Image (cartoon, rainbow, N blue to C red; front, side, top):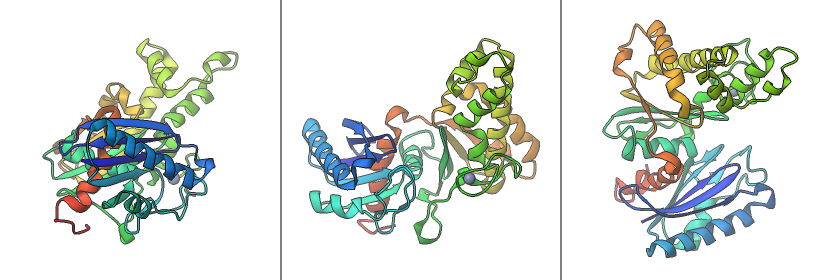
Length: 313
Ligand SMILES: [Zn+2]
């Protein structure tokens, strides 16, 4: 019975997840990062105790997935954009002390990748790339069941590979990153820029609303969809060329409308990936649903401690 903790910029979700990846109980609360780490920790501890009680179980380990830069080797937060003032604090040490069980921390996209690889759309596949497209683009790479890590156990930032050097500036320092071109807000910004003067009520639509308009046949919205599919396709084609994975698992809010983009994505991949067997890479929708982050956080514990009788990976 793993206590799972998903720390995001807007909310913290906590739950109890069994060995089959089933969520037995859960709670969530606004992150309120500005109230400080101690306050956040206190609520996480409280929610873990309550969800364990609700499920009628004792927690045997704790897995954490968190937004932003984290250090899996030490369990500390790095320079976390969305959690100002939390940097340097160590939830792994603090939760281990509070519950007397082993705990592990990963970036939340890596956590979701681990969850989908074991219990979701990537089950049974050796080489998997997980991509989440929402307000940002994140991802994780799983090779033979193991999370790919860079130096110092670092999480690679697939959202920040450059698609168009003349594209919009990105917070990372580059211009035209995948994240600056293919997220929901990027789609909304393009639509806003292209709405003709005098049609101001259409200028502030969200990506979701643009998708709905496109389904009704609106011309500009359909162009926004084509453009989105093109940029999603370019980034995914790069991943296919680099890794030729068995499967790319697609998650995140933009991918809830994936049916609108898939033909365009496949067209781009088939145009530019002809030196690799691109048709062997399946594009699959993330299948763990709204609890994907929580289930992934639980998997973080299994991945670190479950497979090798307690030896850290
Ligand atoms: Zn960037």
